[in-house]
Length: 221
Image (cartoon, rainbow, N blue to C red; front, side, top):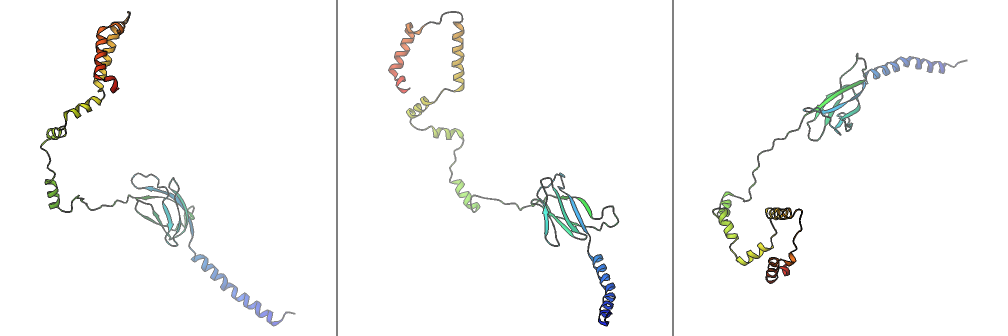
């Protein structure tokens, strides 16, 4: 036979059950709905994707980054503020709305644009001298020549023999090489179909060889 104590415990449990269920129902209604937020972050001027942009919830500072195509996916509650940021672009914010009554109240897709972050800097003038007076003093001390002809004359005002030695070491110019090639081609065209003479028996060639030998042209080479 059941004891009076057991009847008392059973009565208390049955009396407190409606209160517990009511509190549970109230807590469930107070909990905001979780929304799966997906979308693409783009630039506002070109609508190009913004890769590796930061997307996070301002409530708990947790989030994700976009991929190379600007796509992201993040869970958020209704009423959360989602922050979008990237280097060189302005920040943007999105408040997750209540989607109750729509076809998919737990999903939301957005295209979030970010504008260019343009910074206007003040004009900066850089001078190699600390003051205008110092610049004037240094400029007057340069003693510049009147024109380029005077500078060329001063550069060439040294030993003429040294200048000749430098000129002798210089190679032929492109125009001179072209004239020599033309002369050789004209000479070969003159002997076309015939026998090319041998310079071994040419007295003029021997004279040129002896003069070159006396001048020491072979020693220089």
